[in-house]
Each structure stands twice: as structure tokens, then as C-alpha cells.
Amino acid sequence: MDYDDMLDRAANETADVTGTDERLSVPDPEVRQEGSVTVVENFQRLCDSLGREPTHLLGFLQREVGTSGHIDESGRARVTGSFDAARVSDAVDAYVEAYVRCSECGLPDTRLETEGDVTLLRCEACGARSATPSDD
Image 1 (spheres, rainbow, N blue to C red):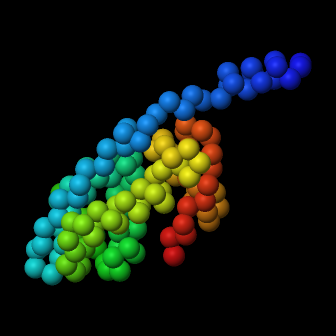
Image 2 (cartoon, rainbow, N blue to C red):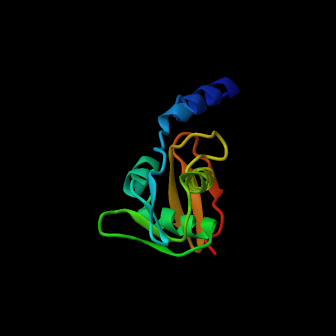
């Protein structure tokens, strides 16, 4: 097999990267105060739009704002402390950069995989695999 044949074969077997950033539509967090607790009303919808488990996003949110929290029976995130929508939105944006967007192609077509003690971000569009920040 000569070089041109191998190049054609590689091009045919490589996934097309035709997406754009516009496919990732993350809703703005709907935040309200309830005493000394901040409630993210649309937390489940945020998780669904990102394609991530609510417990993973909540853990990241807790680390980002430095507090504790839980998910209530209605799927809302309840974090201790007073945080405005901009602060929660900044944390969600940081999560997207660390755990959703591919570091190689920038597309959101990713999934989290665990190998041993390491969580990897695997891109369905370009095939790249990259380590995510540790969850310590």
C-alpha cells in the first residue's frame, strides 16, 4: 500500500469534525436565596445540557465556591452560603472548560472515562483523550 492509499484510508476512517460551539447550549443558572442557602433551580437541566451526572457537577460546584451542598428531591442544587447567579455561572463555565469541551478540538462531544484512579475526557469527534483535573 503506497502513501496516497494510506492517506485516503486514514481520511475515510477518521470521524468528521463538523460541529460548532453553538451545539453546546448551556442555560443560565436560575439562582435564588433561601435563608443561608443558595438554590440552583434549574440544576438538573444544566446537567442534562452538559451530559454529565448531577453529583459530578455538584462536587465541582462545591469545590469552586468552597462550600457544601446537596441535590434535593426535585433535582435542585442547594449549596450553603450566598452566591449570586454570576458566581454560579462562572463555576459552570469553568466546569465546561475542564470536563466538557475537548482540549484538542474544542467541541463538546465528550464523555468521561475512568482508568484506574484517573478520569479522562474522551472526545467522540476527534478521538482525543486528556486527563481531567483531579477531584481532590
